[in-house]
Amino acid sequence: MNYIDLVGYFGSFLTSITFIPQVYKTWQTKSAGDLSLSMLFIVLFSCMVWLVYAVALMLWPVIIANSIIGLLSIMLIYFKFTFKK
Image 1 (spheres, rainbow, N blue to C red):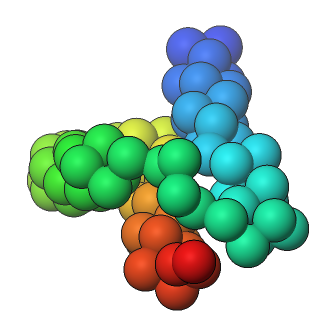
Image 2 (cartoon, rainbow, N blue to C red):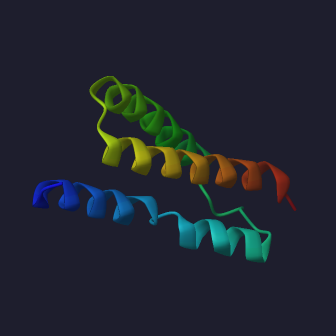
């Protein structure tokens, strides 16, 4: 593994953790009213497209990051429908 691979994995890590604070806060407060459903679906669709690309080229940092972001997006979409007031 060379330094550019490490940069890719570090970027993957940073990208992957971007939604964790939002998922945690939404779960903790049981409130998802301020989340944009259209944005969440765009992020989810984007992750799916990136995953197709990354799997075809076996780009593991991209596969890892988009898998995690996709899962977090699905969680937020679930919360959006579950935590209605």
